[in-house]
Image (cartoon, rainbow, N blue to C red; front, side):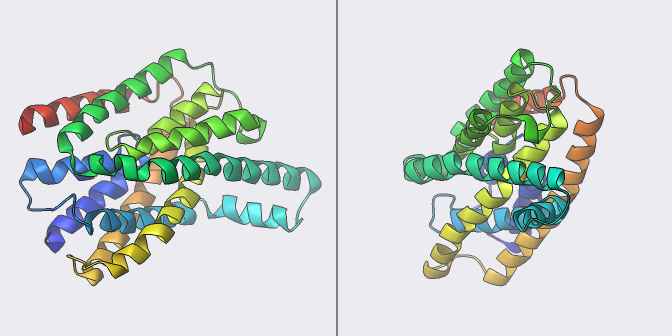
Length: 274
């Protein structure tokens, strides 16, 4: 893989990781469509993707620094009692929702790893992702809750939705956003919770995969991989800002445009790859 190819994949990953359209699905499909000589089943490709995800997680940490700073203050007992209680509850919900993804990810990762090098399957699941978004909008209740108003069961269920993203083509942010709106959150609050959940999950994956990347006979230049991670992070920061503004302004059927995109992109990829 050339540096230009790595950069293109990085920018694509940074843009699609937060948009509910599956960054992993795009990263698997794109090289096949463009005829790139990229060994997606090789030992270096998944760690490369993890580095890009670390760039994304860093961008999320930077964008939502006020939330994380508020959590730290609340844990230390700094601030008004009502604010401390609210921030502690939201932080506890984030921690609780992280557990199902960590457990399911550990159990299912090796069973689903073969999907990472299967572009046709990724395209099929991209279409499935569109149906998840579309149906979620149809069956949700009117969203009015803030994060501190949802229950523990809802938080755990939203967290479990993240495990679907182990399948290329299924969006982590899309699944958790759908879980959030089904729990009664507004689209903006569902997106915020989804992005807060992404930070520890992605960093956790990095802790597991980056050491592996350093041990294998790595096929890519490490300096170029780091630059690609930075590019993914910058793109992700911009994408987050765009999405938070979008969900703030749009509450009715806000996920539908992304469902339409997934259907079109998945169908086009299947047609071009056959």
